[in-house]
Length: 336
Ligand code: KG4
Ligand code: ZN
Image 1 (cartoon, rainbow, N blue to C red):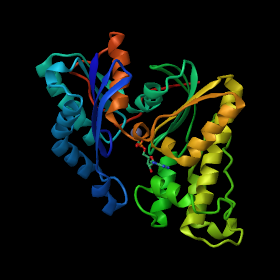
Image 2 (image 1 turned 180 degrees about the horizontal axis):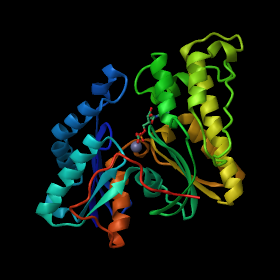
Image 3 (image 1 turned 45 degrees about the vertical axis):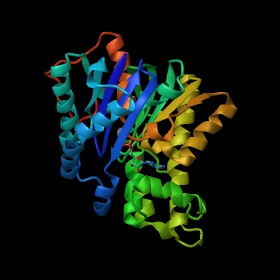
């Protein structure tokens, strides 16, 4: 079954064709990064306008690369939540238009579940496993029992991890996108130049919940308090922030693995492209865990993860109707 996947939830306009949930025939990503760069962040109105201009060419390119015509499409999967509403609506309505002509089944896909599914395309793990979703809008540690069954163990209680990277980078003018620039600068910095502390979380939260707002504020407003006397270069600030941000995450991941007894772990989302996140997760293999994360192209937003997950639903007979609407909100994950 060849599924066309469409992803327009934020600033990447992407379409892909994936066969039987695993075989990527094409994965075209038209990034808007350069067009949002002057604003140091995604401008929602600009994003949706660009999606409207680009979507038909992006879908055409995905079909061309897969050596297909529209008539070879067996089903369509499209991100319908969460994300920027205007951007989501472009992809969703384009998909509905195609479905009305092609008369193929279609399914609305949750973007977070798609990120969690991405590693399953290239390096599938057996269920259940610990899922770690690290993106610009979400930070979720969860137990994944199947492609559709996700139990949230912990989330950020304020900023998402990618958001913290982006805000720190923006404050210090490190470049855009912030996460990528911090990762690059960190390679040349001293991770112990600033000894930022990881904030404690108050009562009423889950043990795997995490807070990035305090760390972000410390890095932006309290450099001198945490200084070890080393120079406040962009490299040193980036490396010290990244060490603590990833360390906080890994502490919770390791505790969740210990408490749940899960032996497999999988990460997805834009920040799963971070070199320290990847090396820290990889190091868990030495402790006997099976670790899987997507290649860099499948970490950030892409149509292949949407098509891949869409296949699973459609193969199980689960489809959406024309009444499907886009939603900016996160889906209702089960929280234990
Ligand atoms: O998953 P994604 O493409 O979009 C969302 O669903 O949010 O994630 C985007 C986030 C941004 O915050 C970006 O700065 C971050 O992923 N990111 C990184 C890296 N590459 C992308 N953060 C740290 N290190 C990277 N190498
Ligand atoms: Zn995403």
